[in-house]
Image 1 (cartoon, rainbow, N blue to C red):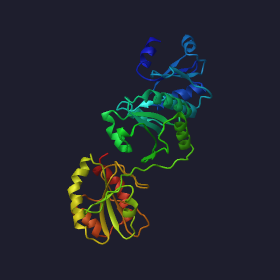
Image 2 (image 1 turned 180 degrees about the horizontal axis):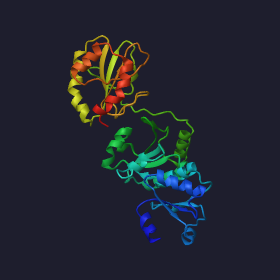
Image 3 (image 1 turned 180 degrees about the vertical axis):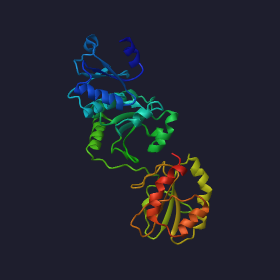
Image 4 (image 1 turned 90 degrees about the vertical axis):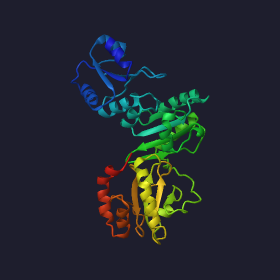
Length: 352
């Protein structure tokens, strides 16, 4: 018992009460323990401990050491692999977990890939009230969404704010994301983060009634003044999918070292084709702009949009010298071969 009390002081745990671990429920519990990382699984057949935790034989309880949270949550209903997985996912983290370097692996590495985020400054006068509301709302989607708070006043969170196109001065903001091959983002149609609004936002997402949100900067007045055209979300389709142009686009991040190395070559490439009637060289800051149906996995990502192709997107996987790009643009390229080869070569060039 003393060992157990010390152990749960540093992590969340699950206690199973099984007189016979070979029972059906005991086997489900043992399998879950083998397949789940980051959660301490314990088992007991001690009557005193079972009484202390309010368990009967076959019962399971989650024991957590989270501020402002229930210390113990008893699992209700049948003990199946699916129901136990849902129970663990709902209780391995606080109902609202604050994003940090330490919690990020648990947030992004868990089984639940839909995350409900609120951004705000811990120093804001309404912070405590908002957290109380968010915790209350989280109860309605526990096990379906991971509820995350991001402190926008923390300097270390600058990159995640940049990823969402959110600034500290925006105040209290919410988003929902779905992790898959990329990250689908959903933005609300409200600014007042009330219990009613947040609960409906979660409900609408889970019901499939929300449309993806795509970040975009405003179109620069001089976007086409230089040989390398500047694309943002709002002008991307008109330029990249122009059926009269072959368009080669670099999707970059301002902080990316590989992107900076490519910049002089890309500028030289733009200079070479600046007067070409049907070839366009362009770039887009993918930390501030997103477009539908174009997945950017690393930086820089290079994609080719051939003319008269019905919005075909080709992953460029060739060399990255000026001569390589010129040979590609001036020669005949097999779009299918480029697509097949791209995944093999991306890791050699791209920076996450």
